[in-house]
Length: 429
View 1 (cartoon, helix red, strand yellow):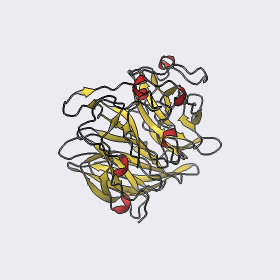
View 2 (cartoon, rainbow, N blue to C red):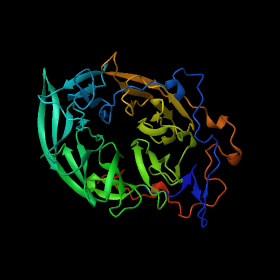
View 3 (cartoon, rainbow, N blue to C red):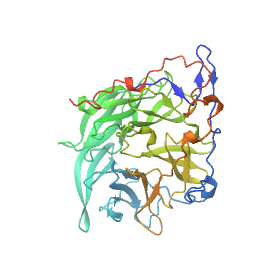
View 4 (tube, rainbow, N blue to C red):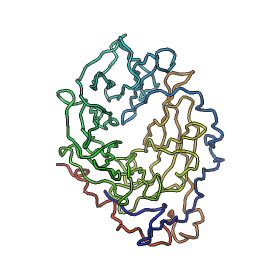
């Protein structure tokens, strides 16, 4: 999937080298006003102090279906620090009541260990031991914790990828000077298996299908150059194909992908600076960069997309983490709605983590002084029908957000998203 066209962002006028800022139906960097119909909506200033004084703990990871989660926690009443005794903890989130199961071993874990929960309830742990990265599966055994060693990978740096949708496989990337190693570290027959060496420096990671076959990575050429998202087909020997090409010199990263609808959440500097945008896998429409996702004093990062919206990508609810001076809170946005709803997060929210139900309920895991494991439920607010609003003068004949206005198109010729050489998405071998 490649794309060169830009909507709602700056565009370079052909042959001039000048950047032109298009008109917009929303004020630049504006946050939305309180929603009188919903008491859950809160402005950022009303969240002051929510996250201040909180301890920053290691990452909290959910399975692709949200049934399990895992994190490292400190043994002494959650007191984090250089001398904290860390241990693994698994959360069960798909039952009538969420609960946490501690998985301590004889020795505490290092704070830089990584955890990844699997669909069967076991937890994969990556540890750094004397220049190697070792892998084991942890699981509860009555009063104790069982451990199944899987093997090790010898390399300087190695990072686990997001949980595979198949629930049984786990992959990791090892960084080399000119290439990136792709490893299957759990779910194979003989421990960690080297899958392929991918040219360039790869990072990120988003799954494009439910089978765990198509993996999207952000790739920087080995000799330097712009970062472009690529698709890696694990069913074809890690065959790599282009995924995003918004402009020749832009950095185009894929943040999230929904396999059901094909909705893609993208970060790119093609408009002249980093912007959050969206597109659709297989669509002929260009990538769009909504103004409502551009906040002046806060960073906006998507973390979950509503599943099950077949053929309706614009109706998918997207959950976003908003980080500002007040701390972190939650944003909810739909491509068709053209507005960002801002809501207070529960105290102790595992920031940037959550999962949608198919009917539009956002589940946010949290832990605080009152509970060690809980889930808050937020229902996606309804959006005002854009056809009922007065269209700006620049797009009076359309109910869509304005495109790059009255300027010639960029120098590069737009290539529709649907023309990408993304093999294997719908046609089995």
